[in-house]
Image (cartoon, rainbow, N blue to C red; front, side):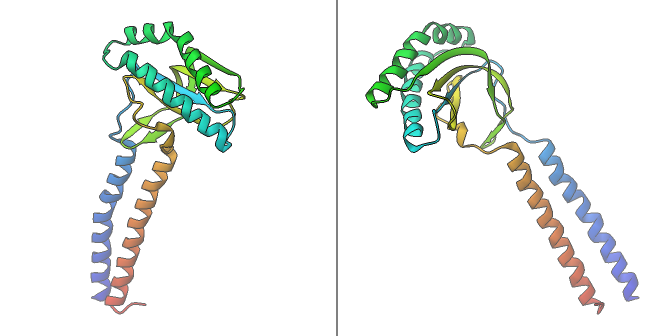
Length: 201
């Protein structure tokens, strides 16, 4: 009798737990993350190196360039207008970067370019997912451009978010895997409890 009750209870546990695990996996596949619109213009800044000095310089350039471009596009809702304004003002952006570097006493070389094929990695920031790919962007390279980069979305204006501090999609999937594993562990504990309850060891 005990064996019969044990198998019935075990079957019920498996029956109940399978949909829960399946739902967790479905959430991983059907995430509600929002994606940056196709009609977007990004900004990517590559620091010379990962030294504290070069990273601080990158942030100074970021602040100055972002403030300037935001003033140009904050009231626009048309991608073509934003594109024309930013492209036509690349020389002005070069002057801004030069001013920041001189103000910091840096002799680093730099480039400022507007391109449609700037490479970005996949990133997850909050509830937003940003797939890897080549995107339209202003690319600023400081010195050798071998340091940690920073990026944001210039249009529509989203530079108040620091996307570079997001996490990769793989890291997020790993977190979900841990949740599923924790659920499975709880199921095992329940089964052991049933063994003890029925006097099986």
